[in-house]
Amino acid sequence: EIVLTQSPGTLSLSPGERATLSCRASQRVSSSYLSWYQQKPGQAPRLFIYGASNRATGTPDRFSGSGSGTEFTLTINSLEPDDFAVYYCQHYTSSAYSFGQGTKLEI
Amino acid sequence: QVQLQESGPGLMKPSQTLSLTCTVSGGSIKSYSDWWSWIRQPAGKGLEWIGLIYASGNTNYNPSLKSRVTISVDTSRNQLSLKLSSVTAADTAIYYCARSMVRGMDVWGKGTTVTVSS
Image 1 (cartoon, chains in turn orange, red):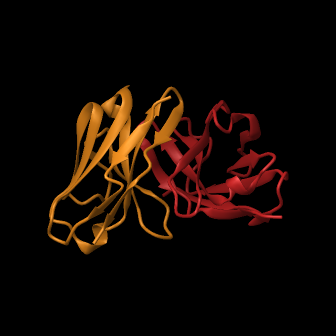
Image 2: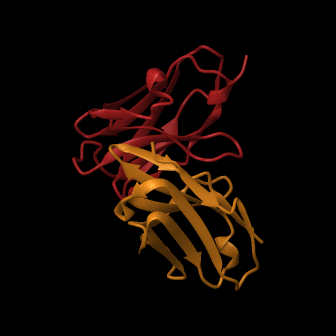
């Protein structure tokens, strides 16, 4: 079973700053199957990044994903108020999904 | 545009079997390019994948829940369902259905809250 560990648990930043969120896998994974989601209070998660670096439809271009192997990063440039939320990484393999525990991005 | 809507009992007692339905609109649940997952989220906590079903009817479940979970599809109603047996307070959560693929889950329902309490 692949375990995804996200860090930090909480990230406190201000609008205009850059956010860097990390997702570490317990073993090497395919970047093709690594995704990032944004979740706001009271809402379902929303797919933001797929294939480690591809923006989903509607994802602003200030969001970027990178990484390979066991280390993946979600970077948000010039934070806007709407970006403050919880972010989850997810991996798919062998007909199963796993989620990281989430990073809360707060003002 | 595909939309998903979960429905369920809301409140349950321990040891009962949870039954949830996810109604798919704007597309066919029989699409061979689509899979369908159930995911849950206890209040204030993270996401837990429960299991998935392919258009073929084949399923795969989270090993931690496998002994209690059944996911099925009713193509005549364009619905998928989740059954979770012997529920306890630990099963209290928001339950989501989502369209799934290797690149992730791109369409989610709004979720339905299930509370297990005596």
